[in-house]
Amino acid sequence: MKITVTVNGVRHESDVEPRLLLVHYLRDVLGLTGTHVGCETSLCGACTVALSGAVVKSCTVLAVQADGREVETIEGLEKDGRLHPLQESFRECHGLQCGFCTPGMILAARDLLSRNPDPSEEEIREGLVGNLCRCTGYQHVVDAVRHAAASGAARETR
Image 1: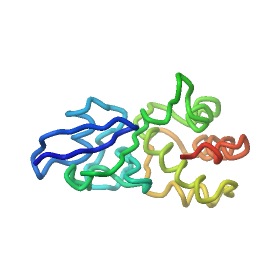
Image 2: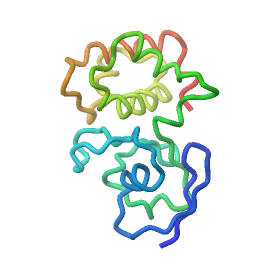
Image 3: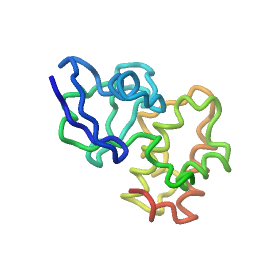
């Protein structure tokens, strides 16, 4: 099947098999390896992307379902050589260890801040449900999201 997908602001036309998952389309066809393949069952959140503005786990979405739509990956957050404020906050607050879960965490946090620019710690933890990290106790991740919220990152969520 032929699909047309805008990824990080760039339009792509591709022939894909109907059963190709969006995560594999992004990684294997487009070479955007920031979206990670984790559990492949939607439990870990490593494959989180924004699809037409909604946060989805790309291991459960077919590439053909993205036809005619916009996808944003972690690579799309950086603008003009500058990291997104959430990316900076994760760096500054040590919100990452190995980095495997970080793209999904950041995209989930951006979605949370777009809906709630000043979340409590409990709201942050609830907003990140479905994104697993095997390296941290999550406190640095929560701190990074709080830091981003305090620095006004919610104004730059989309």
